[in-house]
Amino acid sequence: MAEWREITTTEEWDRILAESSNRQAVILKHSTRCPVSAGALEEYEAYLADRPNPDTDYYLVKVIESRPVSNKIAEDLGVVHQSPQMILVKDGKAVWHASHWAVTKRHMTAVLD
Image (cartoon, rainbow, N blue to C red; front, side, top):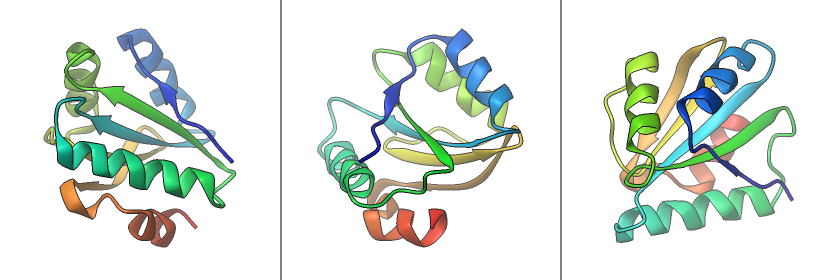
């Protein structure tokens, strides 16, 4: 089982973005006040509990608590902010993203595996 790590600073995000040229990363933008986001987090954790792609690092950003990080991700990747939102980052670019009800274990499996 893989686990996600929380990103709380823009410096952490800068490091993850730089490292994405060596290892792809999945970012889940999560609102702690939204029931749709709670469902997306359950789907994310179900994917991670099964057989997640071992060549991927997994992260979570709480968009309310870490708004500067969330905003910088949107700016750096050119992906309009939504919540919940999942973004696959490779070589410093967003190569796939989904939001709201499209953040499902099935969708993640199709894209990542």
